[in-house]
Image (cartoon, rainbow, N blue to C red; front, side, top):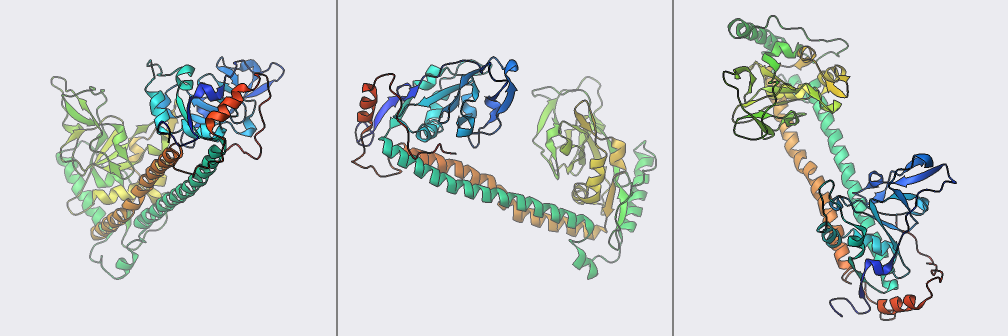
Amino acid sequence: MTGGLPAGWAEVALSDVCRPVSQRGPSVAETEFRYIDLGAIDNKTKRVVNPSSLATAAAPSRAKQVVAAGDVLFSTVRVYLENIALIPRELDSAIASTAFTVLRPTPAVEPGYLYRWVTSKPFIQAVNALQRGNSPPSVQDGDVRSQRLPLPPLREQQRIVSRIEELFSEIDEGERALEHVGRLVERYRQSVLKAAVTGELTAKARLAGEFEGESGADVLERALIRRAHLVAHQLSRGAPVEPDVTGVPALPAGWVWASVDQLCGQFGNGLSRKPAHEPPGTPILRISAVRPLAVDAWDVRYYTEEEGERLDGYFVENGDLLFTRYNGSRELVGVSGVYRGNSPVLHPDKLIKARVISSGLVLPDYLEIALNAGESWKFLTSCVKTSAGQHGIAGADIKRAPVPLPPFNEQREIVALWRQFESQVGALKSSVPTEARRGQALRQSILKAAFSGQLVPQDPRDEPASALLARLAAQPADAPAPKRRGRKVPA
Protein backbone atom coordinates (compact mmCIF):
# COMPACT_ATOMS: atom_id res chain seq x y z
CA MET A 1 0.00 0.00 0.00
CA THR A 2 1.21 3.50 -0.88
CA GLY A 3 -0.46 6.49 0.75
CA GLY A 4 -3.37 4.29 1.86
CA LEU A 5 -3.95 2.93 -1.65
CA PRO A 6 -3.13 -0.56 -2.95
CA ALA A 7 0.00 -1.04 -5.00
CA GLY A 8 -0.42 0.14 -8.58
CA TRP A 9 -3.19 2.63 -7.68
CA ALA A 10 -3.00 6.41 -7.91
CA GLU A 11 -5.10 9.27 -6.59
CA VAL A 12 -6.15 11.85 -9.17
CA ALA A 13 -8.64 14.68 -9.58
CA LEU A 14 -11.62 13.98 -11.82
CA SER A 15 -10.40 16.79 -14.07
CA ASP A 16 -7.23 14.71 -14.69
CA VAL A 17 -9.21 11.79 -16.14
CA CYS A 18 -12.25 13.54 -17.63
CA ARG A 19 -12.27 15.52 -20.86
CA PRO A 20 -13.92 18.94 -21.02
CA VAL A 21 -17.32 19.01 -22.77
CA SER A 22 -18.06 21.97 -24.99
CA GLN A 23 -21.46 23.58 -24.74
CA ARG A 24 -23.67 24.16 -27.76
CA GLY A 25 -27.33 23.79 -28.55
CA PRO A 26 -28.96 21.12 -30.72
CA SER A 27 -28.04 21.12 -34.41
CA VAL A 28 -30.25 23.37 -36.54
CA ALA A 29 -30.09 20.69 -39.23
CA GLU A 30 -32.37 18.50 -37.12
CA THR A 31 -36.01 19.32 -36.41
CA GLU A 32 -36.08 17.36 -33.12
CA PHE A 33 -33.61 16.29 -30.47
CA ARG A 34 -33.58 14.12 -27.34
CA TYR A 35 -33.27 16.14 -24.17
CA ILE A 36 -32.14 14.97 -20.74
CA ASP A 37 -33.08 17.24 -17.86
CA LEU A 38 -33.28 16.52 -14.13
CA GLY A 39 -36.76 15.06 -14.49
CA ALA A 40 -35.44 12.42 -16.89
CA ILE A 41 -33.36 10.78 -14.15
CA ASP A 42 -34.64 8.12 -11.77
CA ASN A 43 -32.54 8.91 -8.71
CA LYS A 44 -33.33 5.55 -7.14
CA THR A 45 -31.95 3.41 -9.98
CA LYS A 46 -29.66 6.24 -11.18
CA ARG A 47 -30.62 5.81 -14.80
CA VAL A 48 -32.03 7.99 -17.55
CA VAL A 49 -35.62 6.75 -17.75
CA ASN A 50 -37.63 9.56 -19.31
CA PRO A 51 -35.74 11.66 -21.88
CA SER A 52 -37.85 14.17 -23.80
CA SER A 53 -38.21 14.58 -27.55
CA LEU A 54 -38.32 18.30 -28.25
CA ALA A 55 -38.55 20.44 -31.34
CA THR A 56 -35.23 22.13 -32.04
CA ALA A 57 -36.97 25.48 -32.36
CA ALA A 58 -38.30 25.07 -28.79
CA ALA A 59 -34.98 24.10 -27.21
CA PRO A 60 -34.68 25.29 -23.58
CA SER A 61 -31.82 27.66 -22.79
CA ARG A 62 -30.23 24.93 -20.64
CA ALA A 63 -30.06 22.43 -23.54
CA LYS A 64 -26.36 23.01 -24.23
CA GLN A 65 -24.40 19.78 -23.65
CA VAL A 66 -24.12 17.08 -26.31
CA VAL A 67 -23.48 13.78 -24.50
CA ALA A 68 -21.90 10.55 -25.66
CA ALA A 69 -22.32 6.94 -24.60
CA GLY A 70 -20.21 6.38 -21.49
CA ASP A 71 -20.55 9.95 -20.19
CA VAL A 72 -21.58 10.31 -16.57
CA LEU A 73 -24.16 12.94 -15.60
CA PHE A 74 -23.93 14.42 -12.10
CA SER A 75 -26.53 17.00 -11.07
CA THR A 76 -25.04 20.19 -9.68
CA VAL A 77 -28.45 21.23 -8.31
CA ARG A 78 -29.64 19.80 -4.98
CA VAL A 79 -26.80 17.31 -4.89
CA TYR A 80 -28.47 15.37 -2.06
CA LEU A 81 -31.19 14.20 -4.48
CA GLU A 82 -28.52 12.14 -6.27
CA ASN A 83 -29.65 12.72 -9.86
CA ILE A 84 -26.83 10.73 -11.43
CA ALA A 85 -26.78 8.57 -14.55
CA LEU A 86 -24.53 6.84 -17.06
CA ILE A 87 -25.37 7.61 -20.69
CA PRO A 88 -26.29 4.39 -22.56
CA ARG A 89 -25.58 3.81 -26.25
CA GLU A 90 -29.13 4.63 -27.33
CA LEU A 91 -28.76 8.18 -25.97
CA ASP A 92 -25.47 8.93 -27.72
CA SER A 93 -25.63 12.49 -29.14
CA ALA A 94 -28.59 13.47 -26.94
CA ILE A 95 -28.56 16.94 -25.33
CA ALA A 96 -28.22 17.30 -21.56
CA SER A 97 -29.18 20.23 -19.38
CA THR A 98 -26.48 22.49 -18.00
CA ALA A 99 -27.84 21.52 -14.57
CA PHE A 100 -25.49 18.52 -14.94
CA THR A 101 -21.75 18.25 -14.87
CA VAL A 102 -20.91 15.95 -17.78
CA LEU A 103 -17.96 13.72 -16.87
CA ARG A 104 -16.45 12.29 -20.06
CA PRO A 105 -13.78 9.74 -19.11
CA THR A 106 -10.41 9.58 -20.83
CA PRO A 107 -8.93 6.18 -21.72
CA ALA A 108 -7.41 6.12 -18.20
CA VAL A 109 -10.72 5.31 -16.55
CA GLU A 110 -13.55 2.90 -17.30
CA PRO A 111 -16.95 4.66 -17.63
CA GLY A 112 -18.55 2.14 -15.28
CA TYR A 113 -15.84 2.67 -12.67
CA LEU A 114 -16.24 6.45 -12.81
CA TYR A 115 -20.03 6.10 -12.65
CA ARG A 116 -19.94 3.90 -9.57
CA TRP A 117 -17.45 6.22 -7.84
CA VAL A 118 -19.67 9.29 -8.18
CA THR A 119 -22.64 7.31 -6.76
CA SER A 120 -20.70 6.41 -3.62
CA LYS A 121 -21.60 8.11 -0.34
CA PRO A 122 -18.13 9.63 0.30
CA PHE A 123 -18.21 11.37 -3.08
CA ILE A 124 -21.79 12.65 -2.75
CA GLN A 125 -21.20 13.87 0.80
CA ALA A 126 -18.03 15.70 -0.22
CA VAL A 127 -19.78 17.51 -3.09
CA ASN A 128 -22.93 18.13 -1.06
CA ALA A 129 -20.85 19.98 1.55
CA LEU A 130 -19.85 22.48 -1.15
CA GLN A 131 -23.40 23.54 -2.00
CA ARG A 132 -24.15 27.23 -1.85
CA GLY A 133 -27.30 29.31 -2.23
CA ASN A 134 -30.88 28.46 -1.34
CA SER A 135 -32.98 28.75 -4.49
CA PRO A 136 -31.96 26.08 -5.17
CA PRO A 137 -28.70 25.04 -3.45
CA SER A 138 -26.10 24.06 -6.02
CA VAL A 139 -22.42 23.52 -6.82
CA GLN A 140 -20.31 24.48 -9.81
CA ASP A 141 -18.69 22.20 -12.38
CA GLY A 142 -15.28 22.95 -10.87
CA ASP A 143 -16.47 21.70 -7.46
CA VAL A 144 -17.29 18.33 -8.99
CA ARG A 145 -14.23 18.04 -11.21
CA SER A 146 -11.85 18.91 -8.36
CA GLN A 147 -12.91 15.85 -6.36
CA ARG A 148 -10.37 13.09 -5.93
CA LEU A 149 -10.65 9.62 -7.47
CA PRO A 150 -8.82 6.47 -6.32
CA LEU A 151 -7.60 5.10 -9.66
CA PRO A 152 -6.60 1.42 -10.01
CA PRO A 153 -4.87 -0.09 -13.04
CA LEU A 154 -7.20 -0.20 -16.02
CA ARG A 155 -7.57 -3.99 -16.01
CA GLU A 156 -8.37 -3.92 -12.30
CA GLN A 157 -11.00 -1.25 -12.95
CA GLN A 158 -12.59 -3.62 -15.42
CA ARG A 159 -12.59 -6.47 -12.89
CA ILE A 160 -14.06 -4.15 -10.24
CA VAL A 161 -16.87 -2.98 -12.54
CA SER A 162 -17.66 -6.57 -13.53
CA ARG A 163 -17.84 -7.67 -9.88
CA ILE A 164 -19.95 -4.66 -8.85
CA GLU A 165 -22.45 -5.35 -11.65
CA GLU A 166 -22.63 -9.00 -10.64
CA LEU A 167 -23.28 -8.23 -6.96
CA PHE A 168 -25.69 -5.37 -7.69
CA SER A 169 -27.67 -7.64 -10.03
CA GLU A 170 -28.14 -10.08 -7.15
CA ILE A 171 -29.34 -7.26 -4.89
CA ASP A 172 -31.69 -6.02 -7.63
CA GLU A 173 -33.16 -9.50 -7.96
CA GLY A 174 -33.73 -9.69 -4.21
CA GLU A 175 -35.40 -6.26 -4.18
CA ARG A 176 -37.69 -7.26 -7.04
CA ALA A 177 -38.70 -10.30 -5.01
CA LEU A 178 -39.40 -8.06 -2.01
CA GLU A 179 -41.55 -5.74 -4.11
CA HIS A 180 -43.47 -8.78 -5.38
CA VAL A 181 -44.02 -9.92 -1.79
CA GLY A 182 -45.27 -6.44 -0.90
CA ARG A 183 -47.78 -6.53 -3.77
CA LEU A 184 -48.94 -10.01 -2.76
CA VAL A 185 -49.41 -8.89 0.86
CA GLU A 186 -51.51 -5.90 -0.22
CA ARG A 187 -53.58 -8.09 -2.54
CA TYR A 188 -54.12 -10.57 0.29
CA ARG A 189 -55.02 -7.71 2.62
CA GLN A 190 -57.67 -6.48 0.21
CA SER A 191 -59.13 -9.99 -0.09
CA VAL A 192 -59.34 -10.29 3.70
CA LEU A 193 -61.05 -6.88 3.88
CA LYS A 194 -63.58 -8.04 1.30
CA ALA A 195 -64.15 -11.26 3.20
CA ALA A 196 -64.75 -9.26 6.38
CA VAL A 197 -67.56 -7.14 4.90
CA THR A 198 -69.24 -9.89 2.88
CA GLY A 199 -69.54 -12.33 5.76
CA GLU A 200 -67.01 -14.83 4.41
CA LEU A 201 -64.58 -14.20 7.27
CA THR A 202 -67.13 -15.28 9.90
CA ALA A 203 -69.11 -17.76 7.77
CA LYS A 204 -68.11 -20.87 9.75
CA ALA A 205 -68.90 -19.28 13.11
CA ARG A 206 -72.23 -18.03 11.77
CA LEU A 207 -73.19 -21.46 10.45
CA ALA A 208 -72.22 -22.91 13.82
CA GLY A 209 -74.80 -20.64 15.44
CA GLU A 210 -72.30 -18.53 17.40
CA PHE A 211 -74.17 -15.28 16.64
CA GLU A 212 -77.74 -16.41 17.25
CA GLY A 213 -80.10 -14.37 19.38
CA GLU A 214 -79.79 -11.03 17.57
CA SER A 215 -79.73 -9.99 13.93
CA GLY A 216 -78.37 -6.97 12.13
CA ALA A 217 -81.97 -5.79 11.71
CA ASP A 218 -82.38 -5.85 15.50
CA VAL A 219 -79.18 -3.81 15.88
CA LEU A 220 -80.40 -1.28 13.33
CA GLU A 221 -83.79 -0.95 15.02
CA ARG A 222 -82.19 -0.27 18.40
CA ALA A 223 -79.70 2.14 16.79
CA LEU A 224 -82.54 4.13 15.23
CA ILE A 225 -84.32 4.34 18.59
CA ARG A 226 -81.11 5.52 20.20
CA ARG A 227 -80.56 8.04 17.41
CA ALA A 228 -84.11 9.40 17.74
CA HIS A 229 -83.48 9.92 21.45
CA LEU A 230 -80.28 11.86 20.66
CA VAL A 231 -82.09 13.98 18.08
CA ALA A 232 -84.79 14.85 20.57
CA HIS A 233 -82.38 15.86 23.30
CA GLN A 234 -79.15 17.04 21.66
CA LEU A 235 -79.34 17.35 17.90
CA SER A 236 -81.25 19.45 15.42
CA ARG A 237 -81.15 16.82 12.69
CA GLY A 238 -84.33 15.06 11.58
CA ALA A 239 -85.00 11.52 10.38
CA PRO A 240 -81.96 9.69 8.98
CA VAL A 241 -81.57 9.04 5.26
CA GLU A 242 -81.95 5.51 3.99
CA PRO A 243 -78.93 3.69 2.50
CA ASP A 244 -78.49 3.76 -1.26
CA VAL A 245 -78.71 0.04 -2.03
CA THR A 246 -78.86 0.35 -5.82
CA GLY A 247 -77.21 -2.75 -7.27
CA VAL A 248 -75.79 -4.04 -3.97
CA PRO A 249 -75.65 -7.85 -3.53
CA ALA A 250 -77.59 -9.91 -1.03
CA LEU A 251 -76.14 -10.15 2.48
CA PRO A 252 -75.61 -13.22 4.68
CA ALA A 253 -78.45 -14.33 6.90
CA GLY A 254 -78.82 -12.03 9.88
CA TRP A 255 -77.16 -9.03 8.15
CA VAL A 256 -78.88 -5.89 6.91
CA TRP A 257 -77.97 -2.79 4.91
CA ALA A 258 -77.84 0.43 6.93
CA SER A 259 -76.72 3.97 6.12
CA VAL A 260 -73.94 5.93 7.82
CA ASP A 261 -76.60 8.44 8.85
CA GLN A 262 -78.65 5.74 10.59
CA LEU A 263 -75.67 4.55 12.63
CA CYS A 264 -74.23 7.91 13.67
CA GLY A 265 -75.38 10.68 15.97
CA GLN A 266 -73.30 13.82 15.49
CA PHE A 267 -72.30 14.40 11.88
CA GLY A 268 -70.70 17.52 10.47
CA ASN A 269 -67.80 19.47 9.03
CA GLY A 270 -65.05 20.99 11.11
CA LEU A 271 -63.62 24.46 11.55
CA SER A 272 -63.27 26.51 8.39
CA ARG A 273 -60.90 29.13 9.80
CA LYS A 274 -57.23 28.33 9.25
CA PRO A 275 -55.24 27.32 12.34
CA ALA A 276 -52.12 29.04 13.57
CA HIS A 277 -48.78 27.58 12.52
CA GLU A 278 -47.27 27.28 15.97
CA PRO A 279 -48.38 26.60 19.55
CA PRO A 280 -49.76 27.73 21.91
CA GLY A 281 -53.31 26.76 21.09
CA THR A 282 -55.62 23.77 20.76
CA PRO A 283 -54.44 20.85 18.58
CA ILE A 284 -56.35 20.46 15.31
CA LEU A 285 -55.92 17.51 12.97
CA ARG A 286 -54.46 17.98 9.51
CA ILE A 287 -56.37 16.40 6.64
CA SER A 288 -53.33 14.19 6.08
CA ALA A 289 -54.04 12.60 9.48
CA VAL A 290 -56.82 10.50 7.97
CA ARG A 291 -55.79 7.55 5.84
CA PRO A 292 -57.68 4.34 5.01
CA LEU A 293 -58.33 2.48 8.27
CA ALA A 294 -56.20 4.90 10.30
CA VAL A 295 -56.11 8.32 11.92
CA ASP A 296 -52.72 9.67 12.97
CA ALA A 297 -53.47 11.37 16.28
CA TRP A 298 -50.07 13.14 16.17
CA ASP A 299 -50.54 14.73 12.75
CA VAL A 300 -51.77 18.08 14.10
CA ARG A 301 -51.34 21.81 13.89
CA TYR A 302 -52.54 24.29 16.50
CA TYR A 303 -55.63 26.47 16.56
CA THR A 304 -55.88 29.73 18.50
CA GLU A 305 -59.42 30.45 19.64
CA GLU A 306 -60.99 33.84 19.14
CA GLU A 307 -62.75 35.56 22.02
CA GLY A 308 -66.26 34.22 22.52
CA GLU A 309 -65.81 31.42 19.97
CA ARG A 310 -67.74 28.18 20.60
CA LEU A 311 -65.77 25.07 19.65
CA ASP A 312 -67.84 22.38 21.40
CA GLY A 313 -69.14 20.70 18.24
CA TYR A 314 -65.75 20.65 16.55
CA PHE A 315 -63.92 18.40 19.00
CA VAL A 316 -63.05 14.84 18.02
CA GLU A 317 -63.04 12.25 20.78
CA ASN A 318 -61.77 8.70 21.05
CA GLY A 319 -63.94 6.43 18.88
CA ASP A 320 -65.18 9.13 16.50
CA LEU A 321 -65.15 8.31 12.79
CA LEU A 322 -63.48 10.81 10.45
CA PHE A 323 -63.98 11.08 6.68
CA THR A 324 -61.81 13.02 4.24
CA ARG A 325 -64.14 15.49 2.47
CA TYR A 326 -61.57 17.19 0.19
CA ASN A 327 -58.10 16.21 -0.94
CA GLY A 328 -55.73 16.80 -3.82
CA SER A 329 -55.50 13.01 -4.31
CA ARG A 330 -58.71 11.39 -5.51
CA GLU A 331 -57.94 8.04 -3.87
CA LEU A 332 -57.83 9.73 -0.44
CA VAL A 333 -61.30 11.30 -0.69
CA GLY A 334 -64.02 9.50 1.25
CA VAL A 335 -61.59 7.37 3.21
CA SER A 336 -62.34 7.00 6.89
CA GLY A 337 -60.60 6.12 10.10
CA VAL A 338 -61.36 5.97 13.80
CA TYR A 339 -59.70 8.52 16.07
CA ARG A 340 -57.94 6.67 18.89
CA GLY A 341 -56.25 9.58 20.66
CA ASN A 342 -56.19 9.99 24.42
CA SER A 343 -57.20 13.66 24.38
CA PRO A 344 -59.77 15.57 22.32
CA VAL A 345 -58.62 17.51 19.25
CA LEU A 346 -60.37 19.77 16.77
CA HIS A 347 -61.02 18.78 13.15
CA PRO A 348 -60.81 21.06 10.10
CA ASP A 349 -63.48 21.79 7.52
CA LYS A 350 -61.99 19.29 5.06
CA LEU A 351 -62.76 16.44 7.46
CA ILE A 352 -66.22 15.22 8.44
CA LYS A 353 -66.79 13.82 11.91
CA ALA A 354 -69.38 11.13 12.60
CA ARG A 355 -69.98 10.02 16.19
CA VAL A 356 -71.02 6.37 16.12
CA ILE A 357 -74.04 5.16 18.11
CA SER A 358 -72.37 2.48 20.21
CA SER A 359 -73.47 1.19 23.64
CA GLY A 360 -73.34 -2.43 22.47
CA LEU A 361 -74.92 -1.67 19.09
CA VAL A 362 -72.31 -0.61 16.53
CA LEU A 363 -68.55 -0.84 16.87
CA PRO A 364 -66.65 2.14 15.40
CA ASP A 365 -63.82 -0.24 14.50
CA TYR A 366 -66.23 -2.38 12.48
CA LEU A 367 -67.58 0.65 10.63
CA GLU A 368 -64.01 1.68 9.83
CA ILE A 369 -63.43 -1.70 8.19
CA ALA A 370 -66.77 -1.77 6.37
CA LEU A 371 -66.49 1.74 4.92
CA ASN A 372 -63.03 1.13 3.44
CA ALA A 373 -63.96 -2.04 1.56
CA GLY A 374 -66.58 -3.70 -0.60
CA GLU A 375 -69.81 -2.01 -1.62
CA SER A 376 -69.41 0.86 0.86
CA TRP A 377 -66.09 1.89 -0.64
CA LYS A 378 -67.38 1.45 -4.20
CA PHE A 379 -70.27 3.77 -3.41
CA LEU A 380 -68.11 6.42 -1.76
CA THR A 381 -65.66 6.32 -4.67
CA SER A 382 -68.49 6.77 -7.18
CA CYS A 383 -69.61 9.93 -5.37
CA VAL A 384 -66.25 11.73 -5.62
CA LYS A 385 -66.42 14.82 -7.82
CA THR A 386 -63.56 16.88 -9.27
CA SER A 387 -63.55 20.64 -9.72
CA ALA A 388 -60.56 22.85 -10.55
CA GLY A 389 -58.16 20.04 -9.71
CA GLN A 390 -59.67 19.50 -6.24
CA HIS A 391 -61.42 16.23 -5.45
CA GLY A 392 -64.29 16.15 -2.97
CA ILE A 393 -67.34 14.30 -1.70
CA ALA A 394 -70.55 15.73 -0.27
CA GLY A 395 -71.54 14.96 3.30
CA ALA A 396 -75.01 14.02 2.00
CA ASP A 397 -73.43 11.23 -0.06
CA ILE A 398 -71.45 9.93 2.91
CA LYS A 399 -74.66 9.83 4.98
CA ARG A 400 -76.40 7.51 2.50
CA ALA A 401 -73.42 5.21 1.97
CA PRO A 402 -74.60 1.58 2.39
CA VAL A 403 -73.03 -0.32 5.29
CA PRO A 404 -73.36 -4.11 5.68
CA LEU A 405 -74.49 -4.47 9.32
CA PRO A 406 -74.11 -7.82 11.12
CA PRO A 407 -75.12 -8.60 14.73
CA PHE A 408 -72.99 -6.93 17.39
CA ASN A 409 -71.17 -10.13 18.42
CA GLU A 410 -70.31 -10.82 14.78
CA GLN A 411 -69.00 -7.24 14.41
CA ARG A 412 -66.76 -7.91 17.39
CA GLU A 413 -65.51 -11.17 15.88
CA ILE A 414 -64.76 -9.50 12.54
CA VAL A 415 -62.77 -6.76 14.29
CA ALA A 416 -60.83 -9.33 16.34
CA LEU A 417 -59.99 -11.42 13.25
CA TRP A 418 -58.96 -8.31 11.30
CA ARG A 419 -56.68 -7.11 14.09
CA GLN A 420 -55.11 -10.57 14.31
CA PHE A 421 -54.51 -10.55 10.57
CA GLU A 422 -53.03 -7.03 10.63
CA SER A 423 -50.61 -7.99 13.41
CA GLN A 424 -49.50 -11.05 11.46
CA VAL A 425 -48.85 -9.22 8.20
CA GLY A 426 -47.65 -6.00 9.84
CA ALA A 427 -44.19 -7.40 10.48
CA LEU A 428 -43.97 -8.68 6.90
CA LYS A 429 -45.10 -5.33 5.45
CA SER A 430 -42.61 -3.40 7.56
CA SER A 431 -39.81 -5.78 6.56
CA VAL A 432 -40.08 -4.75 2.89
CA PRO A 433 -38.82 -1.14 3.34
CA THR A 434 -36.37 -2.36 6.00
CA GLU A 435 -34.85 -4.87 3.59
CA ALA A 436 -34.81 -2.22 0.85
CA ARG A 437 -32.75 0.03 3.14
CA ARG A 438 -30.44 -2.88 3.83
CA GLY A 439 -30.04 -3.31 0.09
CA GLN A 440 -28.93 0.32 -0.25
CA ALA A 441 -26.53 -0.08 2.67
CA LEU A 442 -25.13 -3.27 1.11
CA ARG A 443 -24.54 -1.46 -2.18
CA GLN A 444 -22.55 1.22 -0.38
CA SER A 445 -20.54 -1.46 1.46
CA ILE A 446 -19.70 -3.06 -1.89
CA LEU A 447 -18.62 0.31 -3.30
CA LYS A 448 -16.51 1.01 -0.22
CA ALA A 449 -14.72 -2.32 -0.69
CA ALA A 450 -14.33 -1.65 -4.42
CA PHE A 451 -12.65 1.74 -3.99
CA SER A 452 -10.30 0.56 -1.27
CA GLY A 453 -8.97 -2.38 -3.30
CA GLN A 454 -10.79 -5.08 -1.30
CA LEU A 455 -13.43 -6.23 -3.78
CA VAL A 456 -11.20 -8.00 -6.31
CA PRO A 457 -7.57 -9.21 -6.06
CA GLN A 458 -4.72 -7.11 -7.42
CA ASP A 459 -2.62 -8.52 -10.24
CA PRO A 460 1.07 -7.44 -10.28
CA ARG A 461 1.06 -7.91 -14.06
CA ASP A 462 -1.38 -5.00 -14.49
CA GLU A 463 0.06 -1.74 -15.77
CA PRO A 464 0.12 0.65 -12.76
CA ALA A 465 -2.24 3.61 -12.95
CA SER A 466 0.68 6.05 -12.75
CA ALA A 467 2.36 4.41 -15.75
CA LEU A 468 -0.89 4.52 -17.73
CA LEU A 469 -1.36 8.21 -16.92
CA ALA A 470 2.21 8.99 -17.93
CA ARG A 471 1.85 7.06 -21.19
CA LEU A 472 -1.39 8.85 -22.09
CA ALA A 473 0.12 12.23 -21.21
CA ALA A 474 2.99 11.55 -23.59
CA GLN A 475 0.64 10.99 -26.53
CA PRO A 476 0.08 13.94 -28.90
CA ALA A 477 -2.98 16.00 -27.98
CA ASP A 478 -4.66 15.20 -31.31
CA ALA A 479 -3.96 11.45 -31.15
CA PRO A 480 -7.14 9.37 -31.50
CA ALA A 481 -8.31 7.71 -28.30
CA PRO A 482 -7.67 3.95 -28.25
CA LYS A 483 -10.78 1.82 -28.72
CA ARG A 484 -12.10 -0.09 -25.72
CA ARG A 485 -12.46 -3.63 -26.97
CA GLY A 486 -15.05 -5.96 -25.55
CA ARG A 487 -16.29 -3.46 -22.97
CA LYS A 488 -19.93 -2.54 -22.66
CA VAL A 489 -21.42 0.50 -21.01
CA PRO A 490 -23.09 -0.92 -17.86
CA ALA A 491 -26.88 -0.79 -17.93
